[in-house]
Image (cartoon, rainbow, N blue to C red; front, side):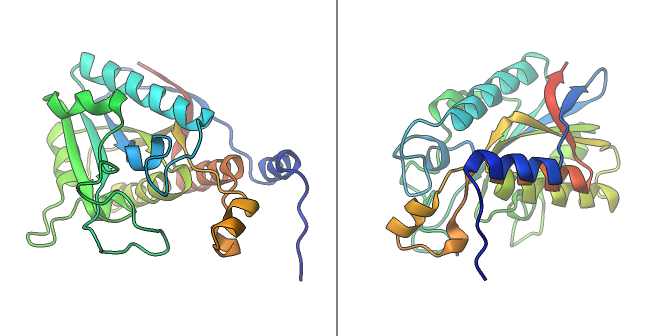
Length: 247
């Protein structure tokens, strides 16, 4: 059976109608809040910097970087904590189905230039992870200590604002997991998980690009559709999808 889709724009419109997402302003007010920055790294964001990086300038990714930087600076100016996940892999250790990426020592695993200032900021916690899901990647395999849980509970956070890449992969996996963590009572103070739409992005891989690279059809990844579906799945699980973050 062959499924025929229309143009990218008509396909997106059809999916948006079937799976609606309605971003709204999110107001933090006087609640304790922390910012989660997911994988805003060279290997996913900087043009030509590895197999999973954009091969040409990309508006959605550029907006995500600038909005992530703006929010991070706003948070630290107010004395609020920021935690950044850094996808970081041992050379030669694969992460199927993806090609080798963000391996130690390649520079792909480093924050984009706009966010390098986080390394020296006392309110920033940087967490390398070797898997898609940041919650799992925060677990020390030897001690079982979870850096993320300790961070949320130490600051007694009521709100997590989430930005980063990819909307439908690392961001989504983290968000749906932390919602279950909240519901399971592991973070007693946490109330809301707000995903800032403009602060998220994903990659674009057309059918033509997949064919040229010898990839299976399941590798096809239309950026706007995938971004929307990621937002929908997070909203469906209980995340607040934010059009703006008001502080």
